[in-house]
View (spheres, rainbow, N blue to C red):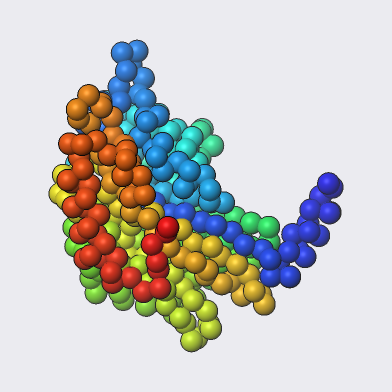
Length: 353
């Protein structure tokens, strides 16, 4: 099929209202010292091949999968909390299981200062992993934003911002996309001007370990809704916070608001930090407007090494048979708490069956 035919089919699909795209979003992909220690092999390489197998089908089934990459590729010597630097193989494994976009604007992106941030960017580029949120300099940011992906005529812009970087200042030319309403507003306007039908804003915000959003998150969400964005995906608290679908009378459309996806993988011990949620959503175009369709969630649990199993495994709630006997009580407690205390407060976002 020639290029003209492909373009005509894409245009006809969009105009007929048949164009649609499935997204999946995951939260904080962390790398504590115990994680890379158990991943190290005798030859000095790092093997993460078992970590994400149980959720790989959820990632691959989506047209586009997004993850918050909450560590740096700062090089050896590697380190965990409080200043993260993970082996390069970690990012490569996330790519192998199907993630299409890494978010790098978070409070740990400067853990190895400018040098670490630049190495992270360069390594992701070397591996062919798209990423947004941090840039080697202002010129690079202006060249890479707006970041727009075209899905058969549905043009989706992705933006990524963080509340801070743990007090670590930028030293030279690196750019971190901090939460700034003027910057965000300008970026949204530029994305729309560049033809984006859909705008997805990823926010690293909130207060750690709180199961409900704080007022700052609610105020920023209202600001983004008033700007007409379509997807608001949050992280940072390391626990799951509620998901909501809001109807905007101003734009006559629904907007998906995810306050926090919680942890994806980590070595955290607090019960509410032992897992997180993936959010799946289909976006369609109808009568020239984006439609948020069938937003749903699935919880998962991060099983730590133990009982002869020397690896971390992310296990979704619909595969409890994969949980080791010594982890079942913790798995069940985590699932019950998050369903009862958090997901019960969702608005129009149902469990993925």
